[in-house]
Image (cartoon, rainbow, N blue to C red; front, side, top):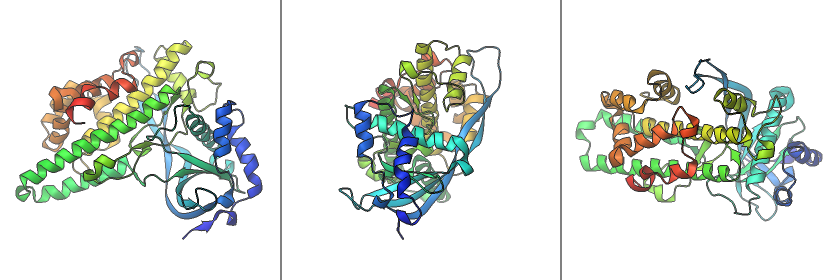
Length: 396
């Protein structure tokens, strides 16, 4: 059931929300102003549907100290205090009437504190900047169509609904299918099994390729993602036979960082404070070094996404999850992918993941090792990942 937005919103707040989101954050270039002018900022223009779900952002809360700054610092991860709600909806007026949207709702200051407002402002700013590019829109990023503020101070961002699934949903589905299939594995048609694995490999490779294209677009426009993971990749389908029509899109730009040289480092208390603290710990002090570190930091997260797709989607339910995989790679094997491979070879439950990364004479392991290199200076840029032999020759 859809409810008209005015039932719970103040149209008088719209002019103020546009300013509160953008004041001091959205660049004052002509294209950015044009982009913001094209966004729908009237609550009367939207209808709100059912609650889809909610989630909290995962934050890196601390780092274990080590003497050698070149070594990896173990991360303590905790759930942040800002809780996000998602709603279905649609545009009710104007040229885009009937367009399906997803509302991302940030709590007001009373519930979420100043951080919630900063995150909402940063996400709007990032999309406004990226969508104003003279190179046109990137199909591998979600599209912001508008936003407004409620009487209680909640910030509602409206995105075009180009998919209700995430890479987490896809991985969960494939793991469940593998678990069900293993029950009657002896009677499973070998040809059907091979076809399923072939479809899965193609789907996973295309999913990761699309995510990297979106990330490369952001980096080309001097923006970091800084919250990249399986839940931040939206899919328009999770049917493996429809992989030819798959378009992965990056979302969750609340922690996105502007790395243009005048803005490489912001003051204390900003959302990028943790990034620059990690950069300093890794020996990156000049603006050029900090920029390089930020890009490499995104690549590391993308490497963890690649590992997640390789291991979780090719394993049965409860065999592997993102946190246990991170511990396996970082803590147990200290990012030694050759040792990781030998360990996984001894476990039949991980055999398909090993075979996937073994394609093209181990090209998947090679790419993963490069992306997770403990020295940020040696990690590839996003375009190099897209053009790696695993991506261009092994499957796609």
